[in-house]
Length: 261
Image 1: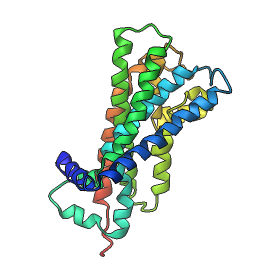
Image 2 (image 1 turned 90 degrees about the vertical axis):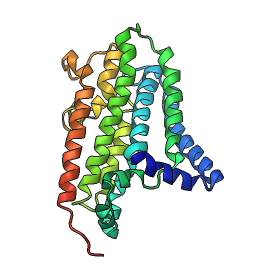
Image 3 (image 1 turned 90 degrees about the horizontal axis):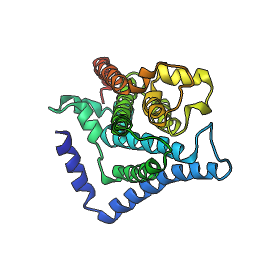
Image 4 (image 1 turned 180 degrees about the horizontal axis):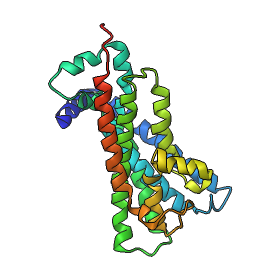
């Protein structure tokens, strides 16, 4: 059903092919600017928080790719507050399709795919330039960390959407967690205060998007001194976040009160 609804929106967008292509290009260009900012930083310093340019671009690529995948799949759940205010969530609830699927596919256009291209290109550029001894385990960790990171971001999209069933005007705070989290994970955690890193490890587990797996790939020590097993915990953390998101979504819809409009 998700694919069918998404394809319906894509066909609608394809009626205006020039606009569709230009929007996808604009999205890709905006995403490229984040990578360009990293290169600007390295034009002034050879290392950032002990990491060289290839390592930071690796962090950027894995984070951006994971976030882009989650944004394509569930990014529009951030609009739930709008549907609550306008009363249009009521119509979604009586249709024979999950409200989550309806909101996730709303306005689905190829423009969303524009974020994927820069992320793939940057990751493809960084990987062969990493100064690491590649093993089957390290190579396998790359797709695992991207998939786990995408699942974590998907869980955060749904969690922040569910909150808007109760806190209708929390859209800005939701963006700080999703888009802010995506920006945060593009850089080494060693840039930030230790207490902050603890927060994004044990409270909002953004460190498991790519930081903990990257420590294994890059053969780096953990600044928090966590056990080596933490490098491999991303899939379990992703499953926990998604389970919490599912519970929060159901609770949010259960406590939703119609506007009556």
